[in-house]
Length: 264
Image (cartoon, rainbow, N blue to C red):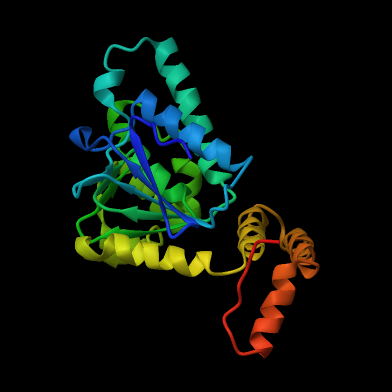
């Protein structure tokens, strides 16, 4: 694991969990070019080698912001060509996050505006601190969400609510994000990270192949018809029948002991 990133911090926990922090607290963890490149590098590597990881937790450094979106100070004065070049990289980064084969949970510890809200909607699921705030403010800047916001947000909260959020550009609270389906739990700031890690540990204790196949079946199945989704689900299911973890799970149940899954 590369420990030399400039704008993100990574810490391996309990062997199978990686804590990833957006680490520009002086700029409300706003996404500059370097951060986008480093996140792209990290998540594209997981598509080649998961390095024994079974769960990822993504949060922001500090206690005020998860990610304030694109760094507009860096963008000030960019030519159109420079803007488009940077955004193409952000698009690639988001695709790598969405395609990550490892369960990816958000601990949204403060403001998640613009790209920060789009990243939140691209995760498998997320918890938020009670002081978190969300917004997609792009239309107030003469642009629109372009890092999955118009696609992932409607899938999380429904078309009509997403249209309201995106077209007004108005912020909404963590409690509203929970009620609308973007966030799974709202917690006090002091409890957020440990609660998220507890869920990550629970996921990491389950059979890794089962988790990977279930994640893939859910995500891809939602993009298919029901009949195609059911067929795809069975393809994913059959992949596990011959695994050692499937045998271990049945043995452990009958021997009344916790299973020891090895991902094989």
